[in-house]
Length: 278
Ligand code: ATR
Image (cartoon, rainbow, N blue to C red; front, side):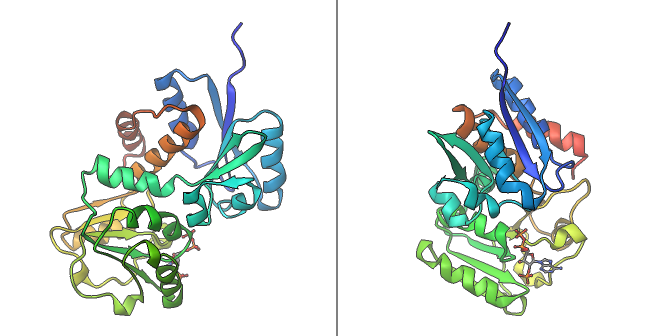
C-alpha cells in the first residue's frame, strides 16, 4: 500500500472559481509528486485558526487568495524578502516547526513577461495602473529588471504617490493621478486595478500606447477584459490577460513546496483551451 499523499490547498472566499486545484493537479501528474490539492472556502474571521489547523494536521502547503493575502502575513512565522516587500502572502509552507510566508505573484508575472513572451524590461518605460495590493506585489520584481522608469497611475493619486515613494530605493518610480499620465508611449502597460472585474476601463490617454506597446492585464476571464479590449482598440502590439502569470506563480509555489519546478507551457495551453481565453 502506498503512503497517503501530502496535503496542499488554496484558501479563499469565495474559492469555487479557483483554477489552482486544476493547475496543481496537472503539475503533480507531470512531475510524479504524491500530493493532493484542494480548494477550501474559508471566511475571513476563521482564517488564522483554519491555517494553523491545516498545518497542525500535517498539511504541507497552502495558496492564499482573495481576501486573505494580507491576513496571511500575520499567520506566517517568517516571511521571504519578496513577501515582506509585497506586504502580502500568496503561499504558505512548512519551515521547521513554523510556517513560512512567500509571495510568488511578482515572480510569476516577470516569468510570463520575460520567459514566455520574450519581453525586455531593462531600460524600458513601464506604466502600472492601480495602486492597491496587486501593484504592491509586482513592483519589486519589475523594478529588479531595471526599467528606465515605472509610472504608477491611480484613481486616488495619493495612493500612487505613496507606493512610488515606498519603492523609490529600488529604481525610478513616479506616482500620479490619471490626469497626469504623460502623453508619451510606454513600452509596457500593466493593469493592476480591479476595474476590469466590473468591466470598467480607467481613463488612460490614448497617447500612452503605440504600435510597440505591450499591454498586460493581471486579471483574466473567459472573454477579453475591458482593458484588453481597449488596448487592442488603440492598436497596441499585443494585449494579454493574466493567465500566464497565474500558471507561473503556481509553478513558483510548487517549487517552494516540492523542490521541483514544473514545465508551464503545456499547462497554460490547456487552461487557455479550457477557458476559451482570447
Ligand atoms: P487589489 O488587492 O486587487 O489591488 P485593492 O487594494 O482594493 O485591491 O486595490 C484596487 C485598485 O483598483 C486600486 O488602485 C483602485 O483605485 P483606488 O485606489 O482609487 O480605489 C483601483 N480601482 C478599482 N476600481 C476602479 C475603477 N472603476 N476605476 C479605476 N480604478 C479602480
